[in-house]
Image: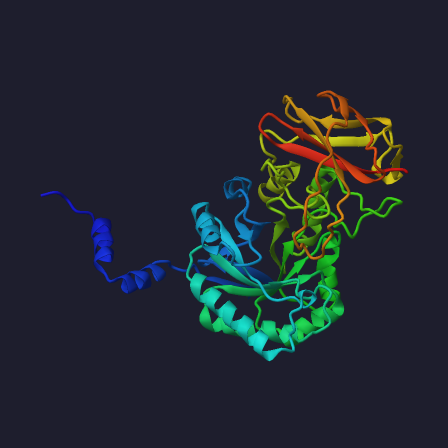
Length: 434
């Protein structure tokens, strides 16, 4: 008689159940992994499955296998869009998920004085929590993202508290937080007064990350926190050209910023910081196509990923991405506010550091300056590239190009790619005079 496996019998029994019972069994087949926040000996610590857990996360659900290989352990979402796929992929890669619960924003027209709208939103969140609360990859619920950006109605904090209390009742196995756009004293005091049910506070911050631990203390918040977005200097924080467009850091400058900011703003508060989610573990158009993503549009990781691996593991990868030592047009840098004449002939030069003696590929692109500028990470359209302007280029980083004929603001982008598809990238804004 053939041996019949237990798994076969379970599968057969499921098939014999009525459809409604099959659905119930499937819904309860996941086993939640409990996460909790503990304060001991003056230090806050997340425990997951009764083991200490420090968040080494990527904001976004890009290449999860690479995140894991780089020493990361968690991903963050901003909503439950594609939540099942994200949770399953995270579980398959040994990662956890900070699951975002999208809330309405005042700047998008949501009215937190509208009791019916607030109640309907709470019910939507309830359904989302019930659907995903038992998935084993779930770590924490993130209630809203930057609902305080350009807001005036502070009743939003009462709504968040109401949702936090509800989640605590529905799901005692996971942590609950809310995410702010930066932090200030007034906001901190409101959250402490009106949202006592969150386990810890989460903050999105960029250029000010190093100062965050002391700022929170100065504002009266002595509890645990995580940094849920951090990375390059924000487009609202940098120097601008004389035609008022922001100057983006090179990927090498960004990589250095990630290292220094993490040391100060996350590792610099070992008693209170629970970890962080570096932004963006993916790619998006926001001011430019390269400002925030640690991947290119083709999916290639830039040198920031190497820096994150170093921060998370203490070791650089065996073969590092190339770096940029200098980048200029006609021997001028971006800070010089470069002006060109229409149809003029110009020279660009990027000085490259090759860490691994790789064969490098250098590519260039000219884009008009984006005019579709939004706030708070709202979707933006990528400008269409100009063609036919490159005259001569070489693998050493030299380019001869013709300025566009039409006056206006542009950017010259450069990407240096290694044999194993790691990149360094940068852009210089320039203005074509009338």
